[in-house]
Length: 245
Length: 183
Image (cartoon, rainbow over all chains, first blue to last red; front, side, top):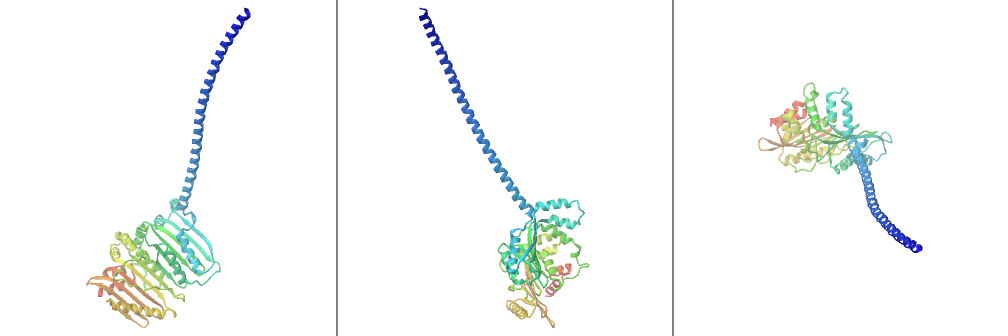
């Protein structure tokens, strides 16, 4: 009897244990399952957040690269990057090709608006002639290249050079305004044939002698320069040597 | 020409520039293409057309209204000075002769003829009606030194040319102005 009672008790106990255990297990499983689900959601969120962050950082890096590239381009464009432009390069190349001679580069420099702005800012503290200051303020950009003949002095075929340079510049939209050639000098000045505004006029200059070449280009506002020219006393008749030809 | 660079740059500074295809106005004369003399003699070419002439006219308006008025009427200015040597003298003389005969044939008026021992100057005018001058051509041959060709195209006012010649002390402009006024 005792045994049967014990057995019943045990069985009840075991049943109740089993039920409790099952309940507990179920709860645990549910909890685990909920936990797992919660964990899965947060993981997904984390993964999403991580991926978004990665994308954002990649975008940031790209953006930074883009900004750096644009800044570099701007610097090159605005400072002139101390090199001559393609038009001046074409002028130089046409001379070098048509002269059939070897040339050495002595200096090649180009300054853009930023460099000029800095120069102007620096020169604000220097006591300059007002006309020099006006001229400096009028200039928007400038380039100069100086080259020397490798063979030293050489007789250049000036007619051939002039013709070649005319052709090269005409194909790029430049027209020759002035050419002066004599035994010692060769000067040619080109201007854009689409120039319409006096505030941004570009001119290219070529000078040659038996030993070297200078190419230059300047972009300038003509208005203050012309005003200065008209105001200059030298333009007046008084004390001025007459121009003859 | 004693100061070719200064003269050329003076002209350029005054008027600015541009050479592009335009409808040829009545006062335009095609002198043809010139090359520098092979001996290394002088060669000056100034070629100025209407786009920058009008730009500079606008600029000059404030300080030099008379110059601005003259410039506004101009379409083109071309100046050629070619040093003469044995290689090109005959060709230049022939070219001057041909230009002059063409101008005569086209009804241009020869208003100045000056022939000295070694100098031959001709100034021609293309007029429209009584007052309007549409073109001026100057040809000079100095047999041992140089040939000069000048063509000024546009609505040219003689009194303005003389005024500018006087103001800036440019002898050729004074002479042209006086010659045109006398006419």
